[in-house]
Every structure is written in C-alpha cells, then in structure tokens.
Amino acid sequence: MSRVVRSVAYVVGGLAIVGIVAALYLLTYRPDPGRFPIRGVDVSRHQGKIDWQKVAGDDIAFAYIKATEGGDWRDPQFKTNWRGARNAGLATGAYHFFTMCRSGAHQAKNFLAALPDKDSMLPPVVDLEFVGATGA
Image (cartoon, rainbow, N blue to C red; front, side, top):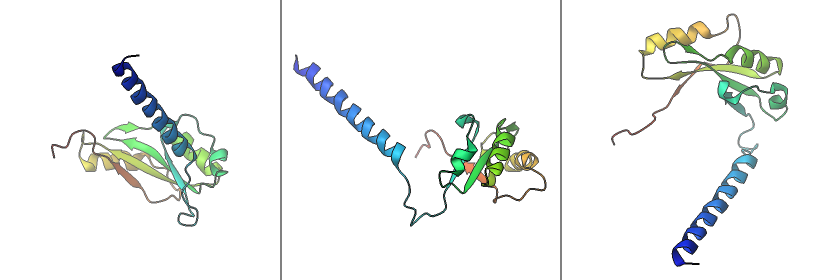
C-alpha cells in the first residue's frame, strides 16, 4: 500500500471516529437538571409529525413553535403543533423567523395575524439569524 493511500485511509478513519463520537454525544447529551431545571424545545414543520405526549414525558415543560417567516409565509404545521403541545400539557409560545425580505412592521403584522386569539401563551419570540458571509 502506498504512503498516499495509507495517509488517506488514516484521515478518513480518523474523521469517521470523530463523527461517531460527536453523534453519540449529541444524541445522549442532556443539560444538567440542577442548573437547568426547566427545559423546552423549538419546533417547525421541519420536525414532521411530533408525538407531543412523548415530548411532554421527556421532562420538557414548554415548546416554542414556528408560526411565520418573512412577510407572508406561515408554517403549515403551526396550528397542529400548537394544539398537540397544548393537549400534552406544555406551555406554548410562538416564534417568527425574521428575514431581510420585508420591513419589520410588515413581518410583525404577518406574525401577529397568525397567533391564536384568546389564548395564554409564552412571550412571542423573533428568530434572527445571520447566514452567509458578513464581509468582516
């Protein structure tokens, strides 16, 4: 076996080991309940169908559920997730994924229009992420 092939094999093997260790850590990590006694999740349509009873049984107290994004998009799973989380006994809050496509006022109108009426909820949240090169 040539030195190049052997070197590549070591690198690939090493990366595989690092990947396995990282996956095991992420799949089994739980925050310290002494330091973080109240835990929650944030979800959107990307999680698919959620078994909310199972979530509530996993020591989760609240859920932030994606309601809207940008100026006119609404998460098609929002109402289903909201009802499911509520029925499972979780406190619920809604979040808006802010984009640079429209003004903040326009996006706020979209978000507020999607929120449930006459429903107690956690404070609304805005998810603001900077993606891509910043030039800095």
